[in-house]
Length: 246
Image (cartoon, rainbow, N blue to C red; front, side, top):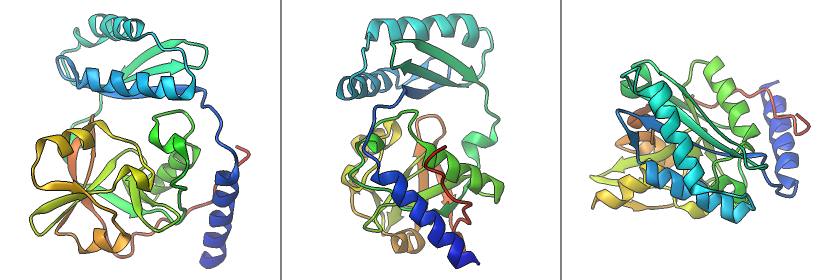
C-alpha cells in the first residue's frame, strides 16, 4: 500500500542519515556562462571554503586557470549561455565540463513537489556542494519521472530546507522569506545575492503550510536564476525508496 511504501522509504532514509558523516569524493560548483562566468568569485569562495572545512587541498589559482582555459576552448566559440561544472576531487584533480541547456531551463515555471523523506539539519554536508547527495539525486529522479521539475525537502522538525537543485523563497504580504542555514541547507549563490540586494527579504523558519499559503513560491539557483514555483496540495512525491548501500 501507499502508506507502507511511505513508511519504508522513511525508515531507509533514517538508516542513511544515522551513518557518521564521511568526506565526499568530490566538491563541485555549477556556474552560468553568459559571455563571462557569472558570480565566479563567489563560486570560488564557496568551493575553497568547503575544501578547507572538509580537508581538501585547494589551489585557487589552478581552479581559475582551469575555468579560463575551458572558456577559451569551449565556451567563447559557441557564443551562447552554458551551464559549467567545476569539480575538485579528493586527490586534487580539477575538472571542468559544460552543456547548453534549452531556453525552458531559464524562463518556465517550475513544477515542484514535496519529499516524503526528511533530512537531518545536523548533517554538515548539506552545507557543502559535494558528490555526497544520493538522497537528493534519487528524489529528483523520482520527481522528474512523475512530471515534476524539482522536489522540496523538510528536516526532522518539519522545517522547509531546500530543493534538490534550488533554494526556496516565498512571498507573503509584500515580503520575501527564505529558510535559514540552521534548518540544514546549502548557502546558495543566488540566495546570497537575493538576501544582500533586497530590503524586503529576511531569513525565517518555514513550514510546508507556508509554501501553500504564500502569495508566491520561488525556486532559485545561480544558473537558472529566480523562477516561479507551482505547488499543489496533492504534490507529495511517490518515492520508490532510498537504498543506503547504493
